[in-house]
Amino acid sequence: MKYSLPGIHSSLKYIFLIIGLLFFTANSNAAISWQTINNNIQFLKQQDALRFYDSNQVLIEGDECALLVDTSGNFAGVEQLVVELKKRLKTPLCYLVATHYHDDHLLGMAVIQHFYPNAKLITHQQVSADFKTYQKAYTDKLDSYEKSIELSYQRLASIPKEEQTAWREKLELAKARLFRWREYKLNPPKIALAVSKTLNLGNFEINITPHKAHTTGDLTITTNNGSTLIGGDIVDWLPYPGHGELKSWQTLLKQYISNEKLSLIIPGHGDTLNKQQLKQPLAFLNALTEHVKSNQNLTSEALIESFPQNVLAPYQQNTLNQKSSQFFLQAGLNRAKSSE
Image (tube, rainbow, N blue to C red; front, side, top):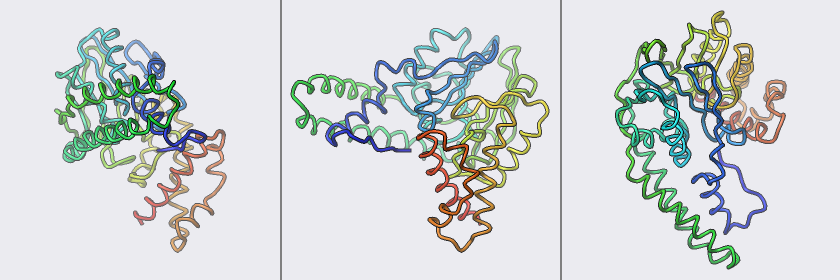
C-alpha cells in the first residue's frame, strides 16, 4: 500500500521515499523486534508503523537445522537480518519457507539465498509453477528503485545547497546497495508442496500444509503438538482479501477457531493472536461475501458506502488502521464480486 507524504516538497518526496522506505536507514536496525516464543521459536515482529507494508518473520531452530519463515520486502532490512542470523544461529539454516507469493514475503528470499545458498526454499506448488513471474517481479522492483534514484539525483538541485551533500551521500549509498542487489538471484524452490509435509529439525518437528485461502498458494506451519500456528496472512487480524479464495479461507478460519489444541497464532502482519481473535477477520470476510451476494446490482462505490459499519468498527482505532481497512475493503469487495 502507498500513502501520501503530506507537507513534503515534491522534489524531496522521492528522496524520502527511497531513503526512508526502500533503503532502510541506519536508525532502522531495531525495526524488527525479536520475541522468544519458546526455546525453538523466535518471532521477528515488524514495527507497528509498517505492519501493513511489510511482513513479520519467524525463525525456528531444532538441534540440527534452522528454518526461516518469510522475508521482508525491504532488501536492506533483509541484509540486516542476515547479520543477526550469523550472530544467533546455532545450527545451519536448512530451509526457507515463503508462506505465499506477495512481495513482502517472497522477494527478500533472494538476499537470504545469496548468503545461505544451501538453504532449501519451500513454497506451495502453485507458487513454484509460476516462479518465473516472481523472478521477474524481483528484477522489476530493482528497476523501479533505479528509476527513482535517477529522478532523485535530478531533483537534488531544487533543495537548499547546505542539504545537498548529505542527501547525495545517501543516494550514493542507495546506488551501492542497488548494485549489490543486482548480483542476487531469486532461485526457484527446492521443495514444492501440494500436500502436507513434516520436517524434523532435530528433536523438533513442524508440519507444513498447503492451502488456497489468502492466495491460491499459501503455506502454514503448525508445531508444538498443534498448539502453535504460523499462519502467514491467512490469520492477519485485518486480512487483505484482494487475491483471496474467500470461501475456502472462511472455512479454514472456522477450523482454527474450533481447534481445541490451538493456543498461539503468529500472523504475517501484526501481533500474535489467540483463536478467539480470529473471529474478527472471519467476520470481515463473511461480511464481504454476504454484502456482495445480497447487493449484486450495486456499484463498488455503493457497496463501500453501505458496508456494515459494525464490522469496520474495530479497525477505526487509529489512522493507519482506518486507511488500511478502507483499502482492504475495496479490494475485498472487488474480489467478492469477481468470485460471484
